[in-house]
Image (cartoon, rainbow, N blue to C red):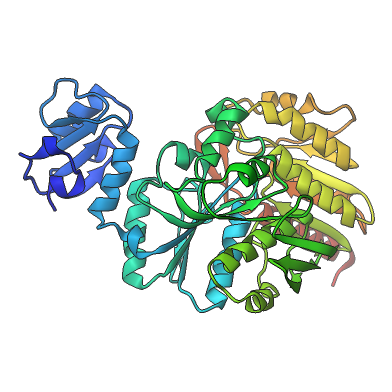
Length: 478
């Protein structure tokens, strides 16, 4: 493949070089690569050329030979990656889900509905890239264009028909999804998160909302309960189905019955009424189910068949997973935003027959403004709160806790060792009590400093249970 096959630009008429790869890291450039200078660094450009790059693409050429100046480097990079892999996205059908909360659960439900209908499906998101029984974990919810297009090419070869994909605000801002035209785009909600990157809620919201245009999607599924969803109801530029519980919608639910083991409700989907039973819990998961059914309807799936398959779909790992132990309930959830924590604690409180406990922390080097808000929410719903570490990264763990404590007025426990925090709260909880462990969900690590240490909330809970069993045996025998 030649340079002109990858970058369609008349300034490259004389470039007949064969291209081996498209690269964004100057340290990894090999002879025959095109290097995209995303950081606009002269040093990186020179390094890439010295290592054999046939072309450097960037915002500035720095007067270097074999350099091409473009207005938007990230957009060019996305398109070049698509071209390099022969535009595999054109051979697949895409469902893209964006929103602060609910992306992973919606992606999970939609992919399962498609599988039950006989489709071959791949998923891309927080849980990695998954298809053909294989999962590859990447550090970003929506990987960069080079990874995405390589994965899409593999999906095409393996016969995948549908790709269900989480589309993060970072991915939209950094144009990682260039070269993809989604058949359906979903908006779950827009609440506070990632202000360390976007600085203002307006920037964050506008970045997500730009997904809902003909440039990116053919049709939309939008939550009418969300303020931003209501905005789209008035001015969405693509055909849309609206779902919700509180505002007029084409897909809605009534008579919701729930327990810690699941829930049921009646769903009206475009005037077709069906009874839904699911293993998922919480009003926010009613919305996730409504969003998924709306996508299925838009894709032409049979509503009755989808309802039957919903009975067999279990929660995503780390999304309101309930562990029953000694007549008390331990809930592990990924909730790490004010809205996410409120949803989980509100649901747990409504289903709790005893006291409500919570263990949580906030990530370091991330949005500080949400910390005190999460403290206020935890204190509002919980009888006992324990603050602990949740990926403190390079921040002082004590300063993170101080920020959370600005929202707390009552006494609470602080235990920086997350395992110890869980152990202590499990020992305090009695029969009928509920303990919510929030923030990490199914994550397999704890980031302290620059070190990624093995850690998992599920493992911590099971370790406490096992230690308690051992202690009982030692004291009372078998």
